Image (cartoon, rainbow, N blue to C red; front, side):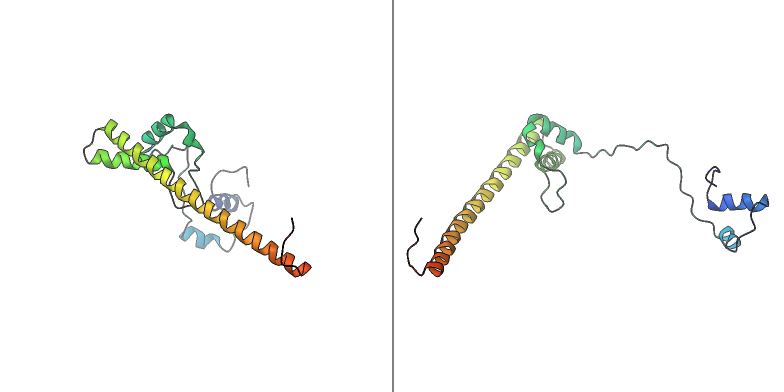
Length: 155
């Protein structure tokens, strides 16, 4: 039946009408309540354009080093800096600010936010590294004391 056009109901009707197949039990029920037919597509998918996409592209032109930020993080909640920049520009434009001024203000805001985030991450990494070193040296000395029975650790 792959050579015939149409859905299952149309194909079965043609086969029953041509006496190629006996009428199945479900045919009457399906004729009374036919399945939903979906419109055919042309094969062309329209590109989705958001209002902030223009400003995202401008942000990437100004700051090509920020292209490495993953736009879709499954485990993250923070939007990428380019989107934050675009949303800020749109919000400022709605308030009546000139486009160039809005972009300058948004750019300063995004980079100050990123720098503060990086500083907090580096501070956390430093604290974690210090804790790891402290616990590692303590655990090594305790292990050494248990194994040798001595109080001092020799390197």
